[in-house]
Amino acid sequence: MAILLFVIFLLLIIINVPIAIALALSSIIIMAIIGEIPLIMLPQKMFAALDSFPLMAAPFFILAGKLMEIGGISERLVNFANSLVGQLKGGLAHVSIVACMFFAAISGSGSATTAAIGGIMIPAMVKAGYDRNFATAVQAAGGTTGIIIPPSVPLVLYGVSAGVSVSSLFIAGILPGLLIGLSLMFVAYFISKKNNYGSKVERISLFKTFKEAILALLMPAIILGGIYGGLFTPTEASVVAVVYGFIIGTFVYKQINFKTLHKILVESVVTTSVILFIIAAASIFGMLLTREQVPQTIAGTLMDANISPLVTLLLINLLLLVVGTFMEAIAAIVILTPILLPVVEAIGIDPIHFGIIMTANLAIGLITPPVGVSLFVGARVGNTKFEPLVKAIIPFIIMMVVSVIIITFVPQLSMMFIDK
Image (tube, rainbow, N blue to C red):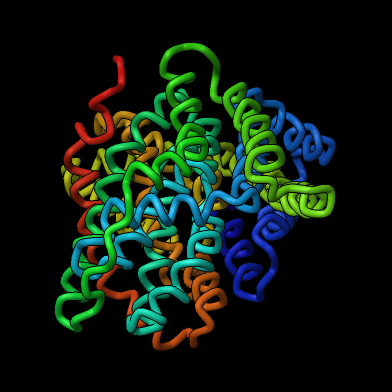
């Protein structure tokens, strides 16, 4: 039945049925075929999956990200990033990536990061003589840090799915997120040097731009500092982030009014609804997989085959890379975590470290066709065609794969600050 479940699910995906509906519909069909599972369990299981205190953090972080996205911080973060790295070769490319990393620490979303910073940086880079496809590729790649650097909505969902501390996942994501950001800057530097992009720009006062951006930069400091210091849980931190974002955007930067607030709330509700529907539907899917003992079978097969942990990790990475090309990160996390977690635990991989491995792999999917959400957002923001953009993004994908391999086999990057 497990094979039939996957076949029906994949067929629905192929004909462009939304993932949440595909999960629910394939599960209902199998339940009807089995005939032993009362359909009354369907709503009970779906509601039980959403009855989670840590999960409450997701909608609030989404709302906080929207508040800060529209609340006027993008330009201030770009100016501050410019004062930090604008003097390097290919300065504006580095500014884009650093600004994305700053914004990632606020929004928790890859596509939001690409849209917010790309709207400012892509036109600026094109005006300065950068190739439009390269500028857009830089922005799309930089946006991937949005789901790795905390607060990350996918990390919240992984924490709920795996039953591990969201606070620990946030701390674990800091260094891997920085590694990926720096690796993207490495690629941008050599491409800029080869094509003579970005002569040195006028030096901007670091103190002045820092003073303008300080309130925006304080948001991740308050969130992570409060969580790590034990002042509040990630869920409570998400509410603090919403209140802080609303106050800054409304009364300090004065970019949020009744009209924009309505837009922010509507977009946040839509995004949250999609995510929660996926989680609820995936709970039924996961229940059927557990009933058929799929996770246990996979783990047992790998152990019986005497495959080394190194090869097992490489195979899991390959699977996640492939899945990320056609499935959004959130859906992949809630579907694959119950399947893969027993496998990695059997070979001695810490669940927190695996959460970072999974998220980093799926981040590559944000810029990989055919799904490539950040790639499509970048193409729209940068007003460029998709085909040449794919060619321009390839060097960044290769470097991200290298970074993921480092993250996978150097667990200290994830676990350095985790108390065990």
